[in-house]
Structure formats: structure tokens, C-alpha cells
Amino acid sequence: MPPVSPPNSADSSPVDPALARNVRAFGWAALFNDTATEMSYWLLPQFLVGVLGAGPMAFGLIEGAAETVASFGRLASGFLADRWRRRKPLAASGYTVANLAKPLLALSQSWGQVFWIRFFDRAAKGFRAAPRDAIIAESVPASQRGAAFGFRQAMDSAGAMAGPLTALLLLPVFLGDVRKVFWAATVPGLASIAVAWLAVREVRPAAPAPGKATEGVLAGLGGVDRGLWLILAAVALFSLGNSSDLFLILRAQNLGVRPELAPALGFVFNVVYTLLSWPAGKLSDRIPRRFLIVLGYAVYALVYLGFARAGSAHVIWLLMPLYGLYYALTEGVLKAWISDLVPSGRRASVYGIFNWMVGVTMLPASLAAGWMWQRYSPATPFYFSAGLAFAAVILLALAGTSRART
Image 1 (cartoon, rainbow, N blue to C red):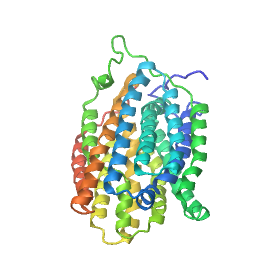
Image 2: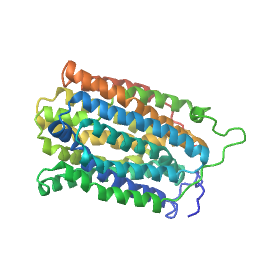
Image 3: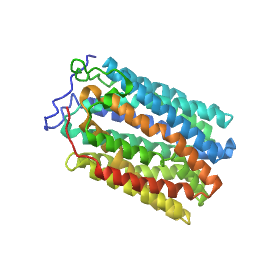
């Protein structure tokens, strides 16, 4: 299938259906992929603690190391995508490796084996992120990037909603055997692989100006808008307190939520995430994207304060929908904002740098959360995360509002 050229960024007409097929294709790949992922993810605390005997520090090590290796995959794939000017093979390979690794959880006999499975799963996730986001950014006009990223995010979270729901339905059928649920996740995983390879079309980035070809992994940041530096600084600060979501599940169980209801928490969270991601993306095409991201980080801080101060399980069920609101306001909108500030030929590299920075902080953030949980109290890591989120809000409020780079 021949590659296509990026659309004219100045065009504000409705998205061309033939070109927008990439947005739809990546949306379906995300839906199937996250269905497979979330069928397993919300059962991992129960599996690690109840079956394999792991504790909070093991949680921090597994998730922190997994996200750290994912961050280096993002950095490398972004650089390679701009260097080779071929993005689809990198993105599709990431979906393939991740969905072949996930079912191996069913064979795990120790938390060390889970460590390596999550390691390869997250590494593959990282490897696909930057080239995928660059293809999406270049498959629609600049005036519709927020909607495009919001749609993909909504499909992603729809899969994340379907995953816990499917796990809840399958657990009684399998008599509570979580290993069989892990095996069942193979089916949507294979569907994700097929869509990524067969439905996505390559979109060539604009050729770099003479003498401006990418020369190194960090070269994509050369000469970018000042606002991007403030965004990266704010996200780095925020990410230092953004430990694995497994700690939210562990805290919920600490407050009395039964382990078998963990997938229901994921379902509640993802209902809000799914319903609001696309509207939030479209809204960011009409108002400064910064406003939504600042609001999202403020919501995150309030949610984590709630987890810190909660005295019963009932509060958790009220906080999880708000956590979905935070994701809807920030995930796709941040990527659209970055694409506004970076030219086409360097977009994958900058996405790689951005995602690397988010992921590389996951290891210290998760290890610190596990340490604070055991050394002080289960509430302490949530106070810490809320404080850094409020500080990030201040930095984001200072970021520029430049728009629509081509």
C-alpha cells in the first residue's frame, strides 16, 4: 500500500475519510489492544499478592522498570521513525510484541517472571507510541489534531473499559482462575496485531530542510518553541510523583474494596475516560489546549488527595470517575499541543523524547511510592503525588499558546 503525504495543515475542512482511515485504524488497534491489556492489568494485584506472594515494593519495581524500558523504546523509535521516514513498521511491531507477551502471564510462577513479561510488554508499547502519534498528527489538518488524538484516546479507553468488564464476566465462568483470564486476553490481542499491519497506511513526514536532518536522538528539540520546554519541564515534575496505577488498586483494597472488584474500579474509571476523551480533544481545537491540561492536572491532584485522606471504600468509588476525567483532559490534548509546536520532520523524535521522559520517571516514582507506603503509611505517597501535581500546574500555566506548526 503506497504511503500518502501529510494534509495541508491550514485546511480546516472536515477530515477526508480516505486520509482519516489512519485515525480510525489506530483507534480500533487501541481498542483491541487495551481490551487485552486491561483484562489482565486490574487482576495483577490480586495475582501478585494472593497467588505469587509479592508486596508493595515488588509492585514498584515491576511497574517502574517496565515503564522505564518503555520510555527508552519511545525515545529510540521516535528517532528511528524520523531518520528512516518510515513509521508504520515500527508502530505495528510494537503492537505485535506486546500482544504476544501478555498471555505469558498465565504461565508465571513467581513475581520475577511477571517482571520480565511486563518488561517486554511495556517495551513494545513504548516502541510503538512515537511513530503512531506522528502518523496520527500527519493524517489530519492541524485544526483537527485534538479531535484525532481524542478519538484514538476514546477508543483506547473503550478497550480499557471492555477489558475489566470482560474479566468480571469471565472470572465466574473460570471459577476465579485468573490464569485463564490471562489466556483469554490473547483473542483481542491478535485482533490488534491484524489491524495495525493491515489497516494503517504509511504517511511520509515532510522532508527536512537541507542541513537540518536529524543527527541525534535529541536533535528534534533544536529550535523548538519556548512553550515546549515549559511543557516538558511541567510533565517531568508531574511524572516524578505519578507512580503506577497499581498503587490506586492496592490503596482501594487497603480501604476495603474486595480484590475481585478491582476490574469494576477499572470499568468505572474507563467509562468517564471513554465518554470524555473525544469531546475534550475536540474542545481543545477551539480553546487553548493549555487550559484543559492545567484543569486535568488540578483534578489529578485533588483525586490523589482524596486517596490519601479517604477513610472508607465508598470514597474510592467516587474518586475513580474523577480520575478518568483527568486522563480525558490530558492524554490526547497533550499530544495535540506538542504537535502544534513541532514541525512534521521532527515530530516523531519529539514525541519519543516526551514519552521517554514520562516513562523514565516511572521507576523512581513507583519505587518511592512503594518505599513511602511501607516506611510511613499507605496515604503518604498520595500526598506526595498531589503536591508535585500542583507544582506542575503552575509551570503549565506559564507555557506558551503557540499553535499550528506544519
